[in-house]
Length: 232
View 1 (cartoon, rainbow, N blue to C red):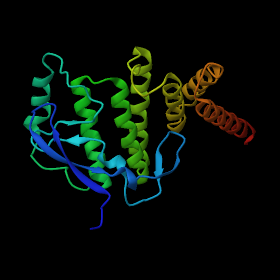
View 2 (view 1 turned 45 degrees about the vertical axis):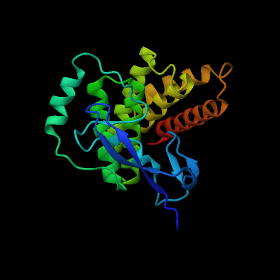
View 3 (view 1 turned 90 degrees about the vertical axis):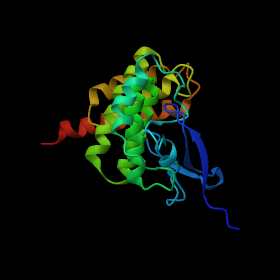
View 4 (view 1 turned 90 degrees about the horizontal axis):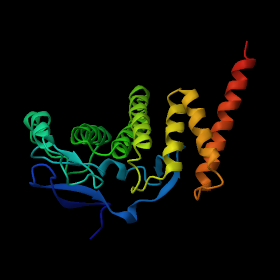
């Protein structure tokens, strides 16, 4: 029997506690060819995109979350989610293979639910960034930039509040992402400031690749600025 790239998994909703099915991608079918400068993975197999399945969407109440969400709900938050999400939800399943549009919808629901639940800024930033990546695949530049800006702002909040500590996100990586997303949305002053912060840490960093990427981007921006100054 031929093994497909997909398998189904039972998930318990963090909010309503009911069980539902979600689809995951088998790791043997995931091979990364390269990364974009904001870490978007480019997969060898264009027909199988694991990014589409990171967010679990409860078919019963609509609450959407990832493995990074905590089980803790602050007092009063469950009532807000019930009001803002569950009462408005028309039960339907995101449990099968997803189109890019369904992947985008799942991430947007995750951003909404994570914000209501007061999840860490770093987690919400990650959801928004992945939404931008999916819009990039669809060549929807305006929406891609909109979600890059949401991600960038949340990463700034995360860096300020230090809520990324204890996660897989390092200080160098978060500074780099703030800079690179700022560059991509055309906010070059902020980009330059944060690339400089990355480069300043080069002697202490254990992530030389990110330092190198920051130097390359900074140099590109400098060259672009010089070209602009020379153009009539």
